[in-house]
Length: 67
Image (cartoon, rainbow, N blue to C red; front, side, top):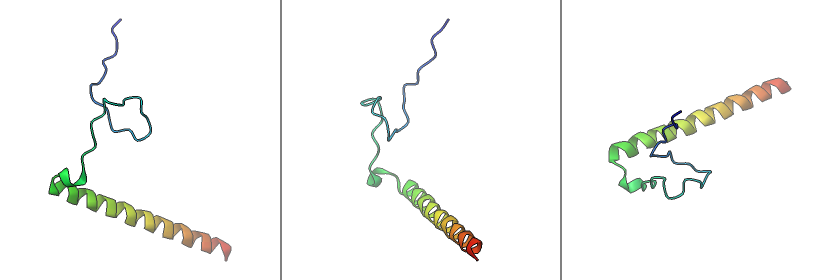
């Protein structure tokens, strides 16, 4: 019976310290290529806009139930 293969890399984990020292360092914003920063900024803006739209739609549904 063979042992399962262990990955040598770990995904960045905000909630666990069990892989401390083995996790790759998170790069600083300024170290990221300009194209990457632009793409991330666009995704974050879209996330905020979508979240605000969902919250607005939820509030409108709640108001409609009170009438």
